[in-house]
Length: 312
Image (cartoon, rainbow, N blue to C red; front, side, top):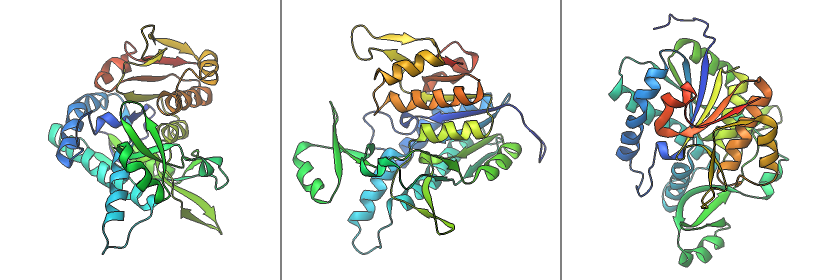
């Protein structure tokens, strides 16, 4: 183990997709989520022998369910959405620590609650797009809209609530994260994209939104001067014509071509689009590679033999 205060050059930022916590068909109980994490923590632990690891994660189902609990509890003061984001950061961070303690108790894992500054004038506040919470059937839609919710139809799954998703601008706890990276093998940060805050009268104030965790993870990876940025998801990588008979996995792609495909709408805004945008921003800012690949193939991704590799 590294001594206290050591400076570490090689840092990898790994953004965990939602399937790291909740697999398709699961309810998302605490035990299910911990067991899912236990499946992937051994590979992360092995990677920590060569790199300092910074883990980020989403929180869409968790924050949505927590917000529902808040609304349905009549005798308890409800918490705003940004507070629910903060609560899920601690919850999921604790689950990650629990998973590591079961597979490799000697590994030092630190969780850094993180706020992320957004622009109060971001147009996302006028156009909610970020899905949170469970899926609903058509019979529930009208009642949900009466609450003032914005909903979108997800083909084959049902209706889902969407909330504003402003662009991340700055990581508030960046120095605390840097200190953690120097002292711990694994640092968990920017959970759920970070708690969204805006500058107001000289202070930072929470706003009701959910920041895309991949975009926030990219900002963090750039700020940490990371060796590489990995996004782990439930597919092998980035595909052209995904879901069709012609779908084709992209094994390697240059920055300019990736930007052109993104601008032409090849990657849907609700799924692969933000991931591609996030890795493009990292590669452009650092001149280093980024990879999107399958959650269960971390070791192969690090070796460069799996996933879609984005190069300058």
